[in-house]
Image 1: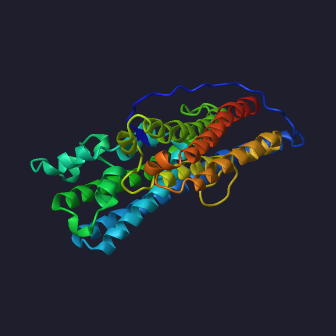
Image 2 (image 1 turned 90 degrees about the vertical axis):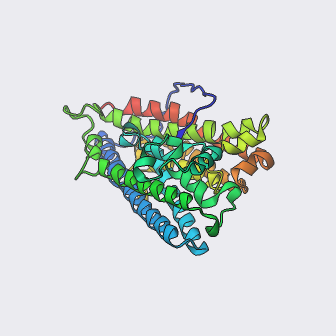
Image 3 (image 1 turned 135 degrees about the vertical axis):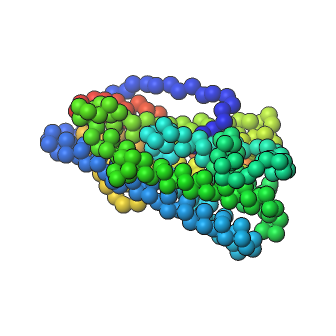
Length: 363
């Protein structure tokens, strides 16, 4: 995701030693696992994740086209369900935000937030502004992607009815959906070995001709950084900023929640951390070899810590039972506990896991 930045947060990097408490494996075992972890990130995480994303984006595009031509409550509900289903996959894919998704601006062009509903209402009221796909493609990032679609489907306060959809709202959501669908198709193509083949850059890490990942260590550190980054985005950004802002400006705090119209923010946050866990495990839907398998071979206590911290962070969301814009008022302890769990995980990833990769992956 791309957050429209308000207060910046600093990141403290600490180096800690990793205890080598399981040294029974051979170097051959470790090297084989290292190659498998690199391969399975591509074949079991990135490619399946982006393939699922493009498939679900197509489903949403079809649902919105149907809603446009036949605005019934049933079709509105179907479009809402398709939007939420697509968000599940998108948020998990944010566990590895590197490569084309950042280099080619797919992330900011589809998932910039917060969205100011006053800006969208002003846009919709301006009949001189075209809303074709070409028009919308030139809009500012905050007026494109998931969240303007969310605003149209749910409306302010989540009170949208199918009958209340205006002609311009329908035109806008159709163009938004086409662009979002195009972005998902292009993002998958950028990784696809038969097209842009960013997958090949990761798979050939450490080979002489590879200028993106000059070492295998660099490739695996990119995965660690992706996990650290999304934990920071959730714990120090998506959750903490509106949580802190509530004490001084409750109305503005609610507007700074990531998915405020659908009430989907807590689900978004949880899926972000699940996405990071998927990277560690080397899986998206199907099990594979991941960094966890390397850590188990040479530092089983570190793996046990990370497994516990990932599970603690993910399950802590179960205690936040309200939409996040309400939870920052009525469930502040639960929100604080979840942020604490995520930040503890992030610290271990950023220090002990990073140091493990630097120490043990020497190509």
